[in-house]
Image (cartoon, rainbow, N blue to C red; front, side, top):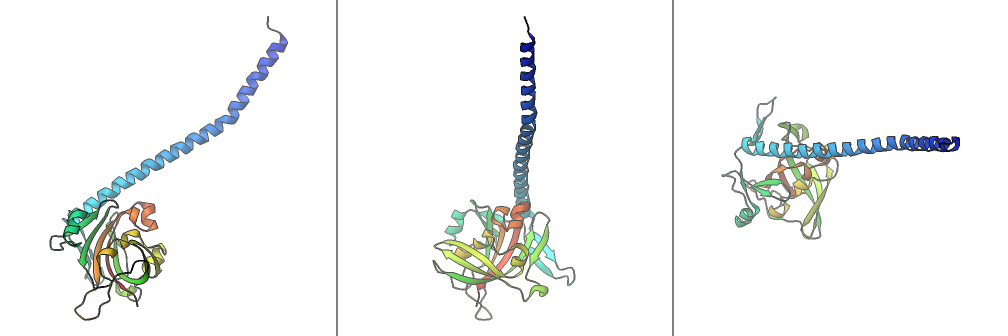
Length: 245
């Protein structure tokens, strides 16, 4: 026998259940949306990294050539068909790359490729010390296949990039003090720029025939500046290094 009291209790119980569901539903939907967004972000980043690797492989095959539209002079000429060697082979060659064979060493743990065009003049940053280093560079965006920035043109002749580099017993870090890179991307030196330092000399040019260190780098977004990391875009660099005054 169903009494009015039992019926009233059941109605109140149903109302409580629906009220709780009504309160929980927005939270459940919000959680689902957040999970979906995170999942999409993860997928998107993974796809961008795959795209980045394809862009690097394409650059290894094709290289790049940049011509000044005003003067018609060649600003940057990077031959394709790059021969990639292992770190083991690099060390067997006395930490050099054969430029005639268009060799680049791949630092596998980082994805950075390096070609040493010139070893430079004697001079290293002592362990535990800091020193100013002056750089001239070209930055080529592999994603857009275009020159992204440089301080190696007449307009930026008086704006070399000067960074303070610290050698913490084999681990290098750096901050830009001035220059185009600092104005574009901030003070932090991309870690990719620091890879050559154990293998080159930083001495200044003292005679007309002495040459300062010069390298080429392919730097993935993970070793690049913050803008490169944010957009997941790799860059190629051609850089000279020497001690500042």
